[in-house]
Amino acid sequence: MTTQVQLFINGEFVHSKSEKFIPVTNPATQEVIAQVPCTTIDEMEHAISSAKEAFLSWKETPVSERARLMMRFATLLKEHQADIADIICRELGKTVEDAKGDVWRGIEVVEQAANIPSLMMGETVENVARSIDTYSYIQPLGVCAGITPFNFPAMIPLWMFPMAIACGNTFVLKPSEQDPMTVNRIAELFAEAGAPKGVLQVVHGNKEQVDVLLHHKEIKAISFVGSVNVGQYIYKTGTDNLKRVQAFAGAKNHMVIMPDANKNQVVNALVGASVGAAGQRCMAISVAVFVGAAAEWIPDVAAAIGKVRPGVYTDPNAAYGPQISPQARARVLSLIDQGKKEGATCLLDGSGIVVEGYPNGNWVGPTVFSNVTTDMAIYKEEIFGPVLNTMTVNSLDEAIALVNSSPFGNGTAIFTASGHAARKYQHEVEVGQVGINIPIPVPLPFFSFTGWKGSFYGDQHAYGKQAVRFYTETKTITARWFEDDMAATGPNMSINLR
Ligand code: NAD
Image 1 (tube, rainbow, N blue to C red):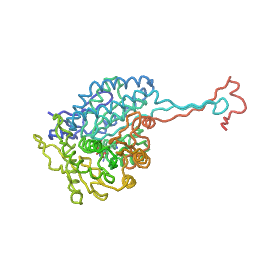
Image 2: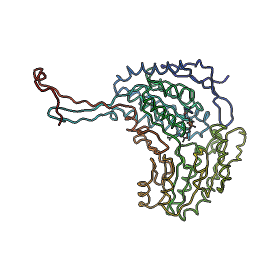
Image 3: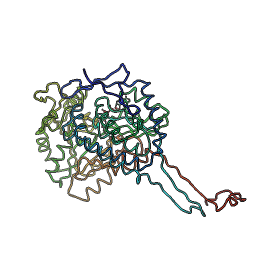
Image 4: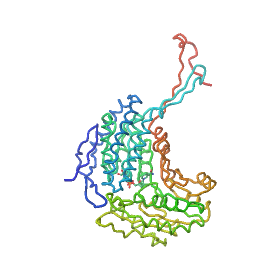
């Protein structure tokens, strides 16, 4: 019998009463490893009302106690990093090291959430008028919700609920239906760390369950990470229902290579950043822009990427795993096909790859195109597979204009030995996260994850100080104290702040 993925409501793991289930498959074999329920409306209501109830006492819990919960949680996550990674390997197919990294990047956010007392400090000005002081606090919003994608089943849920809960909110999480078991294990550890019941709820499903969250009056804020179309829908519907929304969406990230860059560093960086994690990373480099003479390195880049092979997570030589689903694989293959038809040169074609012993896996081999132009589907669409487009331009200005004309703005990189070129690029490029001789510049959690343009809808970003602002409301108090009661009954009671 396949496992039924449970819901986590009001501090307990429970079987859903739903009649609708979605199979969870091992993407290397198509074996169905679990069935995930589409949470019923009653169960959704129960999760939200339990979160609302828990909020009443959780918001009164001293900030230092909330911080200690995060410290214990981080410790448990570290102790169980390998077993959480093992679940990721089975349901998503990532290599073991990649899966451990997925958990680790989440742990770093929990460590940041343990700093919540200093992150929540307000502002004070004494004597804004004679004997009058003004000070501000930040207070939690209430019940917040998170909707997460398949590609980082540990890290992205951990971007959200630890910061929200450390701020004093309670949280309803709807993880991806494609790999829902990772979050259940994380929720189990959160309860073991001492999280009071109701502070975190995990519901499963897809659009129907998300729609309940988007329309429910008790949900005050929505954090979303996923594809562009769904991100736009979440942002529009959530804000239409007067909620605070941050929606992180798709990407198409460019790496600019100047002719003065170190060739070996460029080649090594491009191998990992383009096809690593099967290209299923929102910060993957999918377009390499070679400036001037650097274009001579394109064949070497294709040759290096050609040495990389996908495989199952138990194979220590596998560089990356399968695509998440047969549909995802079919979409990547169709885009590769379209690239060839539209006139790009396919220097390395991974569409026919075979992984011995795993004929049913969703494999796509490493693929490299050259002579790509901006009107081609492989340039315009986020492929989300192990496919690198290479392009050539004559100058840094031309490269910047190309990158800035993209509707996306998640991440970018420049490889160069010139401080001037790097400074010009970081200043002029319209992208939220810039790497200088670093291909995937994901900020650590004391900064925030700051995608721009079509890669992000909202204003306050994930983790760091911006997450604290997103998950709280500011209250500003102006106070005057009289020396005795008589003074308070004097003739002029108005406060003149001018
Ligand atoms: P997705 O948009 O298909 O799904 C994301 C979540 O939305 C899931 O929980 C899913 O159940 C839900 N969902 C799907 N369709 C919905 C609908 N019509 N209405 C309401 N909810 C719906 O994304 P995915 O395929 O799981 O993830 C890959 C995408 O996520 C890529 O585009 C990638 O770039 C993006 N991503 C972005 C970032 C970032 O920080 N910008 C990070 C990781 C992934």
